[in-house]
View 1 (spheres, rainbow, N blue to C red):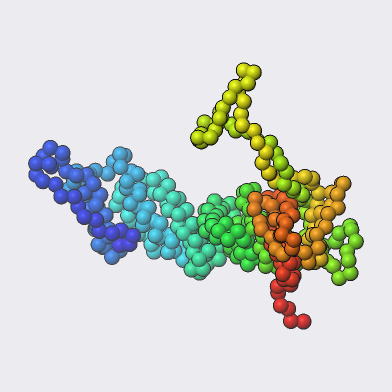
View 2: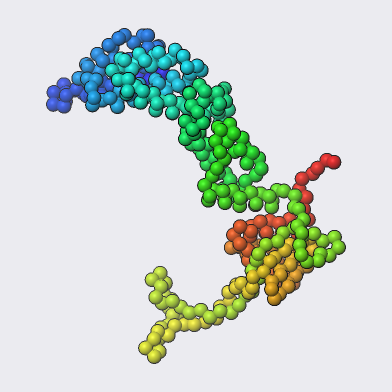
Length: 365
């Protein structure tokens, strides 16, 4: 009988049996094998299970209720998975097996509850996979569940499917409208709210913004400064204008991870450690303002500065650590730093505007 499979009995010599006794596990295996070989419960004679266990000195008592319940649950779960009505013949087999295993009504009810929840979750997975013939409302009615009764299992199934997709979202750093529609439909099929933890929601918003910047037609935005004839603005966000500056640095000889070089020198002056000081160039944020990308210009506006770069003078750009390095025709770079949320989107939009890829979707009027 499904779901039981024949198990090989442990072989033990006469001397081992004399000192250690009969292997108790063989009693459970022999009981299992009777169930595995029988086509259905009608082929299992009354008392056969207890007798098979008894051959190995296994008695049905309070010590092994959990063991017997676990055997029963395998058949009960199968019955719930396969049932198409509440009067399924499979439940009569379950009743017979419960009696043959000597389970009390309370133990049987507890085992049924666990088997029912597992089977319900399995059939919800069938809904997600498209293999379950019933809708979630029909399945709830069949199992006798209201909205709350099976909500935990339905949420678990939804989350299983969501995290499978989320791995793909993370890998591609994109979350498309089709992805959202798929998950929304799944939530409807399972009758669960499409609610996510805050960190996941923020991640999806970021992936969606990147997908929009890369895959959707760019739409002009309104700005408070005058545009040139034929000029349109497609992005604006807070940014920092960066400049290379000379900064004094000194060796940190107290860093435990520091490796000394042969030319390192240490001296003491006025009872203090005199370290090697030198000037180095560092990229520093000079001021904070708002940065715009138009079809003709890159524009930076702050309280005290207005800087613009003609798009015709820009040959390309590189992105690193939230900064965009705009390469100019004269060989120089102008650098602006953006927030974590905006930096990659600004880089994508910049490249599209520079290449003239404003519209991506071909529409037939």
